Length: 351
Ligand code: F0G
Image 1 (cartoon, rainbow, N blue to C red):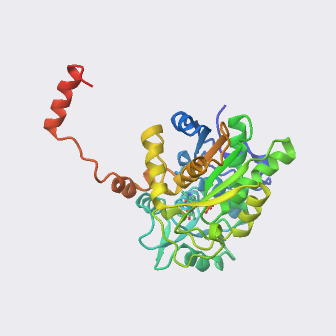
Image 2 (cartoon, rainbow, N blue to C red; image 1 turned 90 degrees about the vertical axis):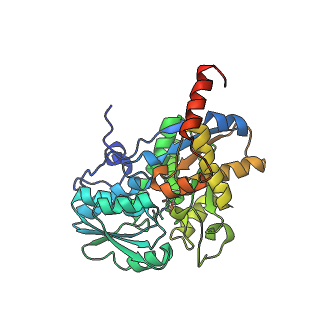
Image 3 (tube, protein in one colour; image 1 turned 30 degrees about the horizontal axis):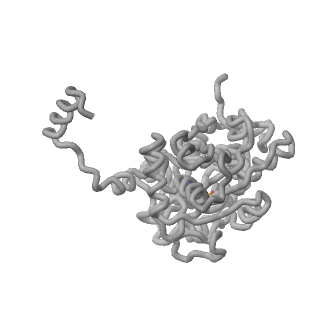
């Protein structure tokens, strides 16, 4: 059957009225991939939900399609958001699609290259500030009035759209995973996913998973229960020190009897390289916090053997080519002579 995007697919579950435009870039329906090597090594049944396959390369499209459709329905003309990169790319794309103006406020020099390229290509008006994401969010919070729609995850329609990740995971897996792991920045996604799991449980009688939230150690306000004034991490997507949905996330973690932990940049980059080189799945660094967190729980012996774990890979690896190149800096390329030598060896059957 043809996939017509999230609003069409999950309309009974979403705040859609007869006046809501059925906006779509065919977001959602992202692959749930079994990681067989890591599953075997770690003694669990590990899947990844590859959100980088969404139209703008991140999970943000799920919430954005809903928020922009509602903004259009309400007669708004302009979208505004603060962003560490992915939200701005998504807002700009759906803004273009809906014929709206998009203004994005981003921390100068701390946006991955691909995300900046996207915001420019989709025609957003871009404001770079000297401060970090938290300051950018503070600036735009007051702006969502009149003709302007604020499309950060403090907009409730964002969470409505994003909750579909829970529906899809259950539909694809055929059951609820034991553990649902995801990176945490502004904490909208973990809150939205929990809402989705609860709604399916209420209406369909499905089980509830344990949530596993993972922050970067240099930007881990929820883990340490304090604001990080100067959050710092290689995972720029989740470089956030004062998450807007902090309370909601805490409630979700409590209700699910889940856990939140932090991973160092080293652990995040290790996970980043591991899933690409061992499983062929390339996700941006921030995404890989989920995998780093799962590995920490495996190492600590916290995860039951054979547990079914779904880790969300929130963004595409191509978003951040600079980090990909940097972590492989020492990897020498073959010279032409070495290449010829290699060809001869291969011909002669030497492995
Ligand atoms: N992973 C990626 C790739 C992200 O871009 C983000 C957030 C998260 C995880 C965390 O999700 O904020 O719902 O807890 N990016 C936002 C942005 C902040 O502006 O693109 P969260």
